Amino acid sequence: MRPALQTRGLEKRFGAIVATQGVSLDIAAGARHALIGPNGAGKTTLVNLLTGFLAPSAGTVLLDGTDVTRTAQHERVRRGLARTFQINRLFAELTVLESVALAVCEERGLGARWWRPVGAHGEVVDRAAELLEQLRLLDDAHRVTRDLAYGRQRLIEIALALAARPRVLLLDEPAAGVPAGASRELFETIAALPREVTIVLIEHDMDLVFRFAERITVLVGGAVLTEDVPQAIAADARVREVYLGDARHG
Image (cartoon, rainbow, N blue to C red; front, top):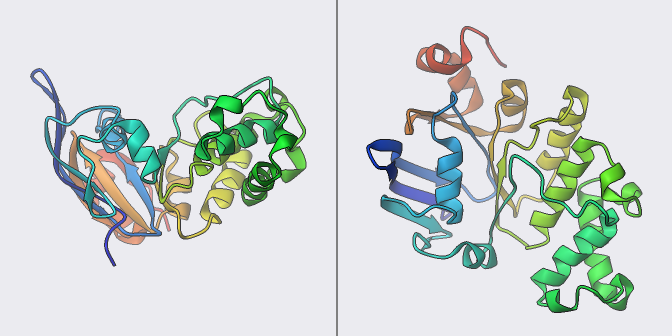
């Protein structure tokens, strides 16, 4: 099966600074794949290259086998690549259902009519409710977004990304700022998403990473140190030295 997302020799230079160097990845369709590494390893730069937020200095990005290296961000979204950010970007004054319904309207080309009552498009409400159910947010549908706990708000952000019907979803530190108990629930919900969505995430909480990921890529100094299944990563002396210390994860 063709990988959902690939890079070949991807590099990003800022003058004399090399933020990403020679990164080649093959992310399998349906994968639950984590990118880890110490601060300054180039993780967020890599995600920005994948999504088109930054243009690479060299190398190639392929989405479902198609070269999208020079493709604009919005076009990559249309082709099935969506992301979330370290800091959520939500409609704080809207209800959860209204927020997700607006994202569904945008995906269906109804964005110019966002001001119409949400109920004017029954199929939009149905799709929004489906997404809320997937993210275990249906009980919060009519609550104002700002009133929800931060962990629930991160789930709303993921629902907004899923409204674009991505084949690949990039999550940039989804548990950032979320209390430990809520972050475990957050990751359980993400892990339960349909397998037609390939998930790639950056995360600093190693307990969550090793519980969630099926494959892990370790970045150091902007380059790939190693990639393997979680058990092999946890046992790798090089990884323990540069990132994990002597802690063991099962």
